Length: 87
Ligand SMILES: [Zn+2]
Image (cartoon, rainbow, N blue to C red; front, side):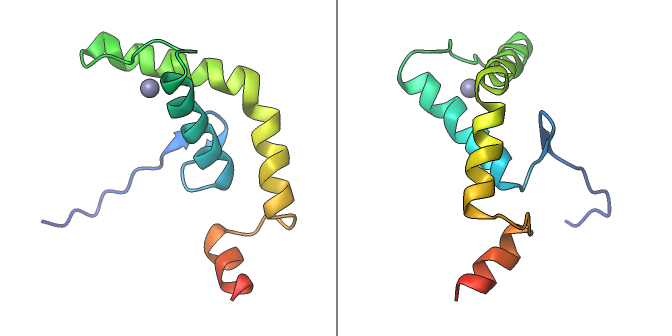
């Protein structure tokens, strides 16, 4: 089934498909593995915990994510463009 509705995904200030968003998502998951943030849980309140965890990661890692993304992609091109240019 196809729908015409499109939703934009954002992680904090970053577009969902951006390298910065991918870095923040990876750091969120890594923080679970090392026990730096609590489990997200499965209940509706768990969603709030997931968002709180992401906010914590953003608070500590937002600038590092921006800097890392800039190292990989100095011109700020869309990820698909970077992959095409690397070929
Ligand atoms: Zn999580």
